[in-house]
Image (cartoon, rainbow, N blue to C red; front, side):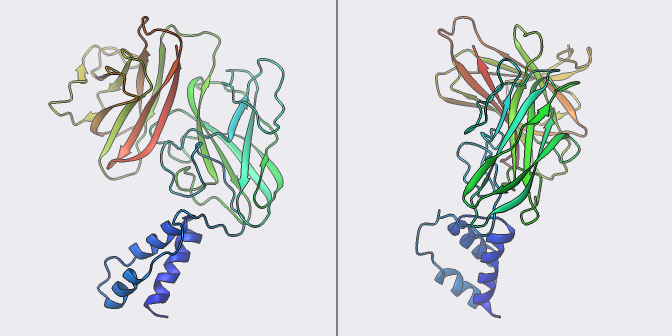
Amino acid sequence: SGPSHDFELEFYDALIDENIARVGHALQDSKEEFSGSSSDYHRWIYYALNLLGDPSTLLRIKHDLWIKTSGGDDASTPVSSPWWTSPDIAIDAPDGPWQTPSPFITHENPKYNQTNRVYIRVRNPGCEDAYKVTVKFYWADPAGGIPWPSDWNYVGLVTIPSIPAGGEAITPYIPWTPTGTAIGHRCVMATAECYADPISIHSPRYDNNVAQKNVTIIGSTALPEFQSDFVINVLRVRGRRSMKITFIDAPVGVTVELRIPRTVEIIKKIEDEHIMLDKRGGCLGIIPGKEEWRVVARSLTKEKLITVSIPQFKCSKKERVGLKITVPQNVGPRGRFTIRIAEELDGEVIGGIDYLVRY
């Protein structure tokens, strides 16, 4: 035992216990454990340890179950946002012949009050085969952060007998019939685990056994304007909570309006002219006559990314936020864009929702 041994133990702790898969990140994590040490020996070793090779090299040990959280996910954690766009969760809606999952199906919007088929692709980039893999599927109301397990609704599970090292497998379908409040924009989650690779935390950002996806559950009628809602949860966190609305490839003139109950305390600044206190109320189920915050964001330029912020806010209980997206009639030919609403804690994204708008 000695100072060099301390760094070595922290390196393998980063790799095995913290699931930091990139060698450069694992080395840096081991160094940061001793960055404040008063020991000269630790300080000398901190500067002497240098990586010979590509710091982005992925390290794989044993099996490593993985469901992609986004197109750019490489199985290392923590995942950068958006982790709620998994390409490995796909739904086959009952609007024609059922798809054959080979190599994978094309995702479709699920149908309300009808039985849809859910497929999940599970990967194993590790160096050993994984056996008896249990895959579960859940849905939840959309939110900037969804606590586990209180806000997730269990749907069902399937078992994959084995996934070879370096390979992948697609589950048998899980039947899902959305009913009750499961309509409109909602979130779904898939998990995969086996005896040798259990889930450490039900968070797609910190465990690559977990993935999340936004879906739109289609009802029997369409609304003339896109109106939906999402939830501000009372997360057991400390820090400054804020929110960002981002227009991605949106045409000029698109408007996003949020209606937030007055019970949410927004610490508004003078320059936040897009945030108003409205005494009329009555938007999307909010009780008429009650004060509510009205947040209006517009895409005023042709920039690919336009971000509008809601500064620090506090919430003492779970609240529903009304959402309306309006596209002007003179925007030109048909197209589509994305509205991203993300919640942050001390400037770091803790959850988000993407709305794909077609016009």
